[in-house]
Length: 640
Image 1 (cartoon, rainbow, N blue to C red):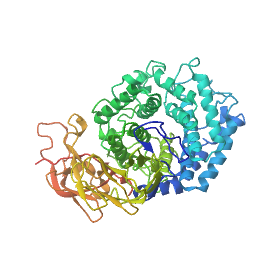
Image 2 (spheres, rainbow, N blue to C red):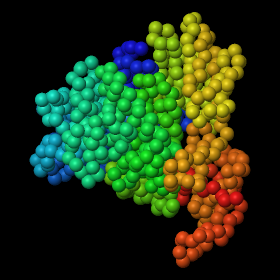
Image 3 (cartoon, rainbow, N blue to C red):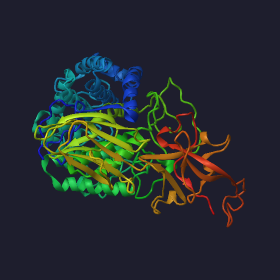
Image 4 (tube, rainbow, N blue to C red):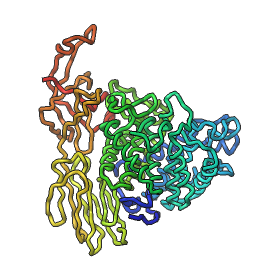
């Protein structure tokens, strides 16, 4: 289908063609429930929290320092700190579009003034390079992040354009993009950025403005990568995805966020240029990565040293890096692939990642965060200071800010724009991909009105009710995604009360709907045991528990005083039950192996004592919310 030009509905991704058309923030509104609460906390707390920290640590003052000629001596923060200011502005822009938030609107206006003054006449804008006392422009493409910062600036500018919020920063972004095209075009600098993101930003600017040069430049960056353009660093060129041409890789590799941002940009280029082989290459790499390099939570990145994907089936739970930003990038990529292909498998992974990584990172109050998302915490973490930045890899407790604070700002823009990832349209009707209390009001391709209210207790409850609020006399199709985990027991109820079992994929009702008609999806929410592929060495002899889209975990908070989660053993032959609070209970034992002089012996572990116990399991996204704890997702199976 051909997609009509954007009409200020507020969509982060607007492909000109594809199987599905995304709906924007003025067409889909989350009204409550699980994601509604997180959006409210994001608006009321996280945006202000992030802004206050960026002022406090000097990242915003860096722009003023450029104007005043003191940036060479006064600049603070890492070389990419500009990008976090831009990500926060993007998040505020989506929030203004969503609610008209006055704080966000005023903050955007204030920040735009100081940023605009820091831009050079030729469009160059960066606080870490190009000024007295600093390195020359583009003198460190491997680590300098100049193009990366432009990418997030341009994404903020596109959000301002698409929402109608506007202002001078949109013009700043366009001038920066024009500077990139002049500097890195076919006859210019032949380099690429060590950290991709500018590629998908340029494509979205092309989609928003119709200026072909932005798409051509993005395609040029994608085609250059993988040919040894960047220097060979200690992690190898694979860290930058510069070791193999994009379309030739077998799976995503190297730094996880870089790889996923690059893949997103490649999908955008493929869709807009009609490059079917490039799109197929990313689909193939995504499938291989999900099958062999992804955690049960949907998290990606198994190596702390270089924040990278590991080898196939190397997924140690206690060393999971699973960076929050990688989860955001994974959802962005899955959304693009879903729009391009229409395959529900991409929405399945997005759902898993949203509930089990993105929802895990922020604290309930929206003012502290996990940077990485381990699946097994062996030590109780100390309470973080509210007044200091923290090392980014600390995962025992959520911290208020990090030396590298990409994750809090990525979360802010994701939560603010989340409604745009719920529902799509095609020539036949509407498709629901993610479940939340929400209202939908749009027009189908032929201009007919269509809308509904979605009500659900998901993910705690498996009932999803869609009540039609706008329609026309002619039939149209309302489709819902049945998740892959709901392979047995899902039921779709039509407006006339007809019940039919449905399996994973899309389940649809086509009818001349009347206002008030209801379509109901009932998903089985029984807790279930999950085993890992036997090739994942670190997980042999263990199981995990899932309920609906949620991965569960055991926390020391729920064990007898002094006992640790490493003592837990579970009985997979006993049924899983739930308690009055909705937590899942597994039968099992707490073991005490005792102390030994040497940990290896023919009968090691044979003399371990064990006491029967009911093991309480809670949603992984809630861990450490009741105070510091130890935690594990994968639970050893009790010996007979």
